Length: 345
Image 1 (cartoon, rainbow, N blue to C red):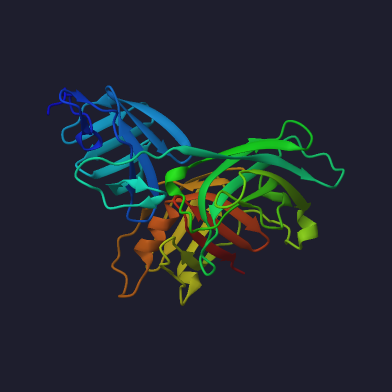
Image 2: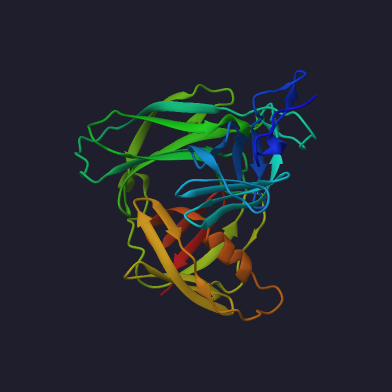
């Protein structure tokens, strides 16, 4: 058997089929050390990458080693079974291994062959009973999550942020990779309506989907005050002290002294960070529920044994969305996981 050479295309993503032609490229799910996932496949001079709810088509680019695909913002690099994905120079997925998905479950990667994942969609409407006009800047946030772990955080498979342009009922669609679905697990769709940091409406009951349930749902939201939720404050102000770090694989830590692991959001879109014996600062951006922390420049002191400074900084760099209610703050991490804080003072 032989196949036509595709320059530095992703050899690990090709399957030989027939006596003299290459089959359609196999899509692989890449499993990263922190438990996060993305999918990629090689095409005719391009790679199709599916990550963070987006589908990217990246042209082949020069690479000193391995295969590299890039556009103005995204870079996908592959060598052997290892891959990484970057956005605007910031690594999002690093040291990830190609792992095919069969019947919704991750499998050891064979030397050849594999199966492709696909997208599923959860559709529905959001409404609420109160006759209240929403502010013009209000947004609807809907997410699909794995809620199977009773003693762990929910794992967010996909979420959308939708500007609200008309009265309820508000339609929505959330796309998720079917390769992430395990038929043994439980999945739910949840929603809330926010205006900046202010929570307006939220689901207060379970809406199961996907495994054994339809993917069409009608969500009824309750006014935030009716759910007993405290009124949100603002990010800027006194430092936020870490209460716990929970990761999808069940690891993480609860600091014995929360004052040694803090973030303080400052005016001018800057954040001050303390990671045990190290301190630093960097930029952050917030837009609605989205929140990300840029490169934080920190001191390089060697903290005492048992320190979690590295874990804390790595988790902070993966912040993707946030929940702010009263004096509590949760940062949801890319690929799953939560940093939970309480305001000091």
